[in-house]
Length: 294
Image (cartoon, rainbow, N blue to C red; front, side, top):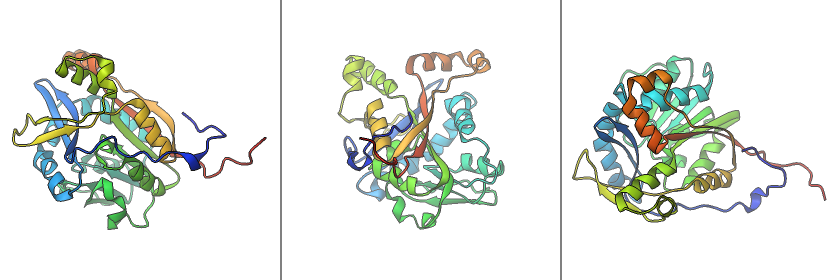
């Protein structure tokens, strides 16, 4: 989706979040024994909302490290390809988890790179040129380590849904891009969530796809923690990108490789049903469209 002359950026709507559960937003990786929950939190109180992710962060890293993890098999290889050659490039990973993926990029040649995550549960074996900082995606302006910095690549790898104001967060990230930089953003295919809700509620796919309600349940990892999920549609995503002054250069819907399908048929069965993730390469819209023609 490239920018079209005649768009009036001055009248793009400011899109607020579709709801506020005051709790935790989630995405999942699915393993052979069921749902492996990836939890990051936003909410009116950082100290209250961060607690579930701080408790569950080690479980997420353990799930991601399994040999049949969809992150390992599908998501990270496709994300890595979309980033291109990172040699000499600066990278900002917003919602970096323990920082392991960013460390891999730095070891591959990226330089002066920063990872931000609300948990603060970071790897200790860090390569030179990697800085990991505890911070809230919803308050990037308040992260001192980012003040005055610009980056060639900015990543939201399954973390974007956890900001309390998506447009504000994307606009702030946009100001941190170098002139030829881009944002790599991934989100779970929204049809997947709609299908899960339809199965759970015994309703229809269309009804749940356009649902505006937040629903909550207890984590299978820790039944003392209640998780909340906020539905979204494709139009929600596209409108947020537009309102933030970004256009889509590339969209990827990665799939399992032929070898992986043979090794992990249960993962292919899951992908056939729930579709997986969307990867977007986003670039800033130009400040001016040039002279208008009558």
